[in-house]
Length: 172
Image (tube, rainbow, N blue to C red; front, side, top):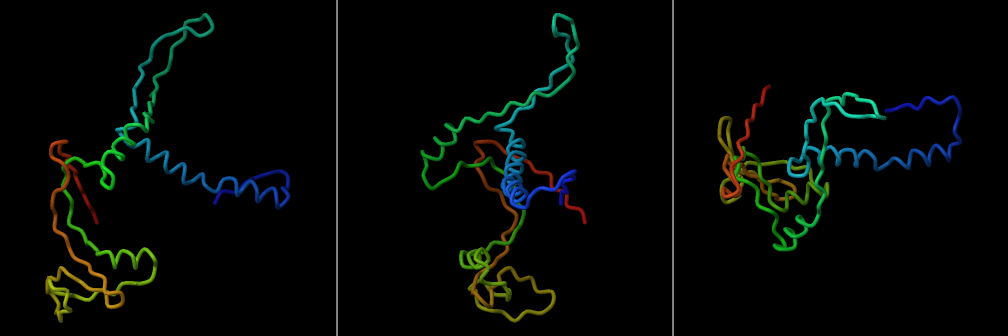
């Protein structure tokens, strides 16, 4: 929480107006940081120390980075309008193993209508009786009947666009 240190007291309605005027700023700052980390949109050019003229006197220019942001929406709009309903294919990449959920389970979580209690199931989504050490890969929620399963490590994306190698290091 940021505290304003003022030598004077603001009327409550003015303080409320100032605070309400900054409500969306955090979202904009996060969006700007995400955009700056997109190499397709942002270029960082390192400028070396050089000498130049300032007010008819030779002065050194300090080293600095110039940031160029390409905000041309036309190319992205063309991609979206050419293939309605499908996104742009990404480069080929490895995907770690992860849990998948069907539409029922996703919507129940999204709408906060179910706190899932997963019960082990077989490949036909029938409940199983398991003991310690069994390797179960399918589960059914006892409340909303949503499905959950384990998807093994695999690759996805378009190999024609290149291959992305991720170096995952998870430390406990």
